[in-house]
Length: 141
Image 1 (cartoon, rainbow, N blue to C red):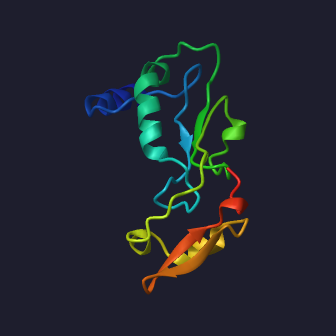
Image 2: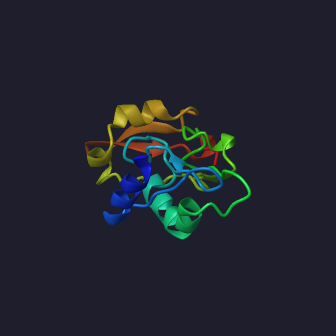
C-alpha cells in the first residue's frame, strides 16, 4: 500500500529504485584499498562505473531471472564473487613497486610485512628511514 508513494519519493530525490525480481541486484563488493592491505583495485569506483552502465537493468525487469554481480579487489574474494553470476576480480599481475618516500604515510609497515603470506615483503632501511623491500622470487602474481 505504501510502496508506490515511497518509490515515487525516492525517485524524486534522484535515487534509483529497483533490484527486485528479474533485474540486477545491488552490486556486492569488498572494502577496497581503504581497508584492505592486499587490494589490487578500487572497488567503489569500479562498482559505480558498472552500475552506471547497467542502471536500466537495475530499474527495469528486463532479464530472464535475477542477476547477481560482485566485485572483489583481490584474490581473497571477500565479496563472494564465486557465488555471483558475474564476477569482477582484481588481481596483481606484476610485483608491487615500493615508493619508500611515501610508504610510511600510507600504511603501517609491520602490518604490511605481516600481511604477505609468502614473506616476500620484508622491512628494510634506506637512508635511516624504515621502508620495505619486495623479494621478487617469492612474489606470486
